[in-house]
Image (cartoon, rainbow, N blue to C red; front, side):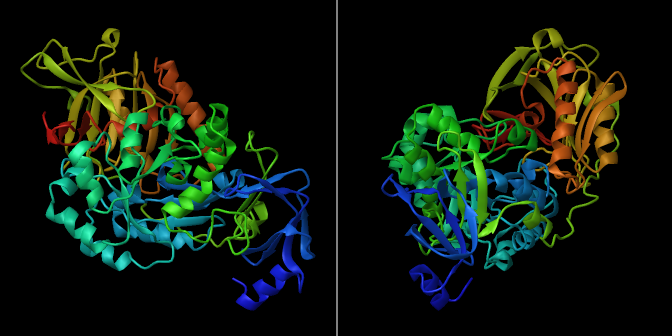
Length: 564
C-alpha cells in the first residue's frame, strides 16, 4: 500500500495517480445513482472519483459501468476441483475479487496442514482469498475422517492476515446442547466472527444458536426460514452452488430494505457449472431477471458482504476503499469487461506473475481393495430406509420401501429407482464399508464413484452392479482420488483429483472438459441428475437432514443418530 501522504496527494490531484479509469460511470451503492468522472487509483486503493485526473497509466472504460468487486461470502474452493491458484484464474475475471473460504474439505483429509496450505496460497493469489478456520473436523462423530481438529489445534492458526474468524459451525446440536468440544471452539472465538450453518433450525433452538454469537447463515432454503433468521439478527447468505440452488426461493426476500443484511455465496460450484452459467455474476443476472433491483443485487454481491464480515476496506467504488473494481457492459448483463483486484488487472499476465506453491495431500487415498460381495446389503427385514434425493438441494427425504431379501441380500432395483449406495473408509483407519439404498439417480446399469464425499471424503459409490462398483472404487485408489464411471467391467470416464482426493493438478479448462465426459458417461447409464457427482457427495453429509449415509451406516439426521 502506498503511504498516506501519497494517497492524499494523488486524491487531491497534486500529483498524477498511478492508474486512472476514464470514461465510465460509477454505480454508487449508497444512493443508487451513477457518478460520472474518472476513478483515480494509488497502489491498491481508490483515491478519487467523480473528477478529472491525470494518471501514469490511463485505462479507457468508456461506456462501461463500474461496480465494486464481488465477494463470495462462503465457499469451499476444494469443491471447484482445482487448486486455489486455478480457482483464482477461473473466477477473478468474472468479477469475484474476494472469496471467503472454509478449507474444511482438505482439513478433514489432512488436518491443520490443509488450512496452512490455503493460508500460504492466499498470500500469492491475485484475488483476495480469506481463510476461515474450520470449526467442525469431522462434522460429527458419526463418520470416519482423516483428521480431527480441536480448539487447541485452531489456536496456532489464528492471526494469519487472511483470517476473519471461525468457519461454519455445522454441529448445531453441539452448540444448543453445550457440547464441551463445541464450547471450547466458541470460547476461543468469542467476540469475533463465527459463521453459521443451521438448516431448518427455528424457534428456541435458533435463538440458542444465535445467542452463541453466530451471525451468518447460508443454509436457509425457503423464504420463511430466511425471514426468521433475518429477524433474529443473522445475515442470510443466498446460496447458488452446483447442487444447492436456493436463489429462486430466496430472491423474493432480497429487497432494497433487506439487501444490507443479505449476501451472496456459492458454497460448492465446479468449473463446468461456472463455464456454462457463471459464478456470482450468474447470481446477479438471475436476481435482476427475477425482479430484484440492480441496487439490491449489487449491494448483496459486495457492500453487504464486506460489512457482514468486517471488511471495512471494500464494497464501494469510493476514495479510501480497496481498488476492487469490475467494469461492466451493463448492470443487467453483469458482463465483466475489466476486473481490478487491489488495483491489479486480473489478466493472464497477473496470473502468470504469481509465485505458486506446491500442493499438499498427495497419497491420501488409503482404502482397502474392495470386492463385489462387499456391496451386499444384509438385513433381516424387508422394510428398508431409503435416501430420497431432492434435486437442487442437499436436503434429502427419509423414505421407506419394502425390498425383498434373496440369498441374504437386498438387491438394487432399476425399475423402482432403488440403487445401492456405499461408503468405503479411505483414510486407512478402520476399513469400514456401509451400504444402503438411494432413490433419484434413475441409474439403469453400472456405477459412479467419488472421493469428494462431504465432509469426511471417504469413497462414495452408487450403482446397479456390484462388480462395477468394486471396479470404480478400486480405480479411485489408483488415481489418488477423483471421479469414475464404470459399466460392464470397463471404465467409461474418469477425473483424477490427487490433491487430497479433492483437487486436480490440471488447469480448470481441462477439469471442465473431463467433467463434460463424466456427465455424458453418467447419462449413458440412465442418470438424470444435472450434477450427479456433487449430488452424490452430499448424500454422505450427516449434518443436513433428513437421511444420509457415512462409513458407519445410515444416519437419521433429525435424530442425529446412526440407525443402520
